[in-house]
Length: 640
Image 1 (tube, rainbow, N blue to C red):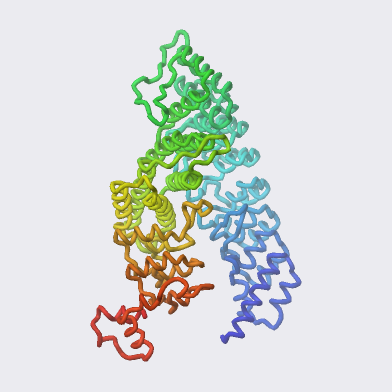
Image 2: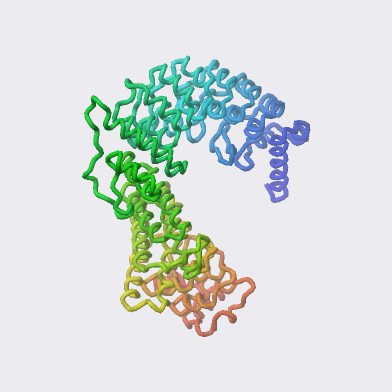
């Protein structure tokens, strides 16, 4: 097809999609019936716009007449999937029936099933139309799909069944219906949770009662959490109070743990100190119940400096004393949570970080840094490299340190003066960040090229470079002596020598020269591009002429920063960057500059080499050189 025909086809395809999306049947017919042969209609109906076919988007939006026309008159593929959005989340590979069921369009569901749609078709994440209907509580659709052969036990890729999602979302009619059909009440997901866990986490007491009546048991998930502990950690006291009354379900030790953990949740999540004390007193009563063997707390647990070496209270007298010391209660909550949940549970490190953030808001930066370091150590020892939680912890440090460096000496909103960053604290976090990059890169090296996704590695590398940006700023500080300078350069060298390539094959130096790498650009101390960081990266061995997948060198990205900092261009060129190097599109540093002239930034004559001029002459006059010049020079000539 020539360009005119292609443009017309694209236009018509868009109009067909828009008509289906809007439910405009007459407009749809006009575009599909106007001198279109059968093959062209089939092609338009099967084409995707924004990832979805006309039938997929019509079913998503509940346009019955449009869907009927597409199926019966245009013979649209009833199983062809597409991408649709629900509550801001994009669902990939969603068949038309899934879309209609998820959106609650009963008549469209019936139309599709009557025309032979597979009731057990799945999305890319293995979600069925039945599970989609269970998610949003479309009871009539659930009944209809099951009546027509939908399998109630098909789970999504996470192992979550229809019963689990109905329990989590609190849809009691659907849960009753599924239980009446003998849905597996104790089936476990990939992470080991059951429907009872989902009820406990969501607070659905009535459904939880139903599950117990149908034989639900108190199993543990992959974190060792029972539904009782799940209710405690989420603060659903009504679930906790109900479950601890069942001696056949809950042991005495489990009751104590649940009450103590719920008390910790009251401190950190509900900020209810009185309620927390009451729960901890009840737990203490359980520990020393009359006519029972006393269940004393472990006393051999090593204290944690980040918790101010807080020891758990072991008797009622110590508990009573807490009332006069709210800060001590907050530390007790952290100690209790770590003992019961263990360091692997996400909530353990989450609440440590939360408490640190509260201290930072109050101007107690040293307490914050100590707690965050403890949480980061916990995450790096327990989680796989590049875990989102570890990324979040490292990013929080970046924001905190950037704020402190930019606001040093100024009063906070609470009246405290922002102290200077302690060099040892910054270098400690930077070391951990580099370690995360190293381990993440090693992990990805074991993955096949097709499955290798560097998104998370790129983010951690950018965070690490922001920390390096702050470190290298200290080189200009009056307190920076030769020893500190050597430590900074040595630590940055450990990052450079990893030779990590991020998204688009960019090196650390590429990112240091790139405005897009800015994560916390609102802080003056951490602006990108960062000339001072680039200078140190080059000093410790970064390749100034490394090319990314688009053929860009760091100098090209500096030009794209707009404006390009003169000091950055000067640094790159004085360290060997080729001013006339071309990228894959044939652009040079000069051609990429917008609103700036080369002579405003650098003396181009100073950085134009005879070898570069010779290479340009060869290319300009199309002089044959391959196989003539030494092989090592061919790439050099080609890049000019």
